[in-house]
Length: 133
Image 1 (cartoon, rainbow, N blue to C red):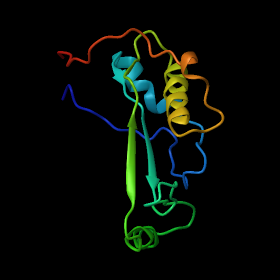
Image 2: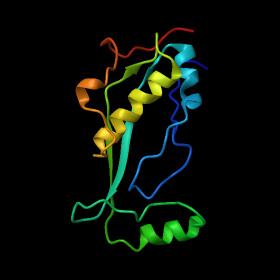
Image 3: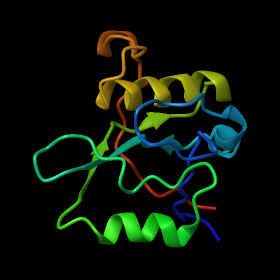
């Protein structure tokens, strides 16, 4: 099949949202090989008052049932998705692509290790298009 979208979670795990783990560059190798765009997306969960919530965390020895119970006991939980600009994988190594994706996500979530936006190059601006096989 061609033209399909794939979602990867390059941390290879989940956290409680209080930190961002290192990304595994190997998970983006297919995008580099295909020279296609990657769109980073930051995900965070918010309580009704707008504070970051760990209610949806599925970490450590927690079971799925425990995680689900924590979500269901909340009267309201908002999941926010912050979409970054597509980053073209052509002419990038998987480490460069990974660093650019992680930098966007860290910055979007307000983590201190995020470089300034001006330091994150997404490559040439091109419209997203479906490529023929």
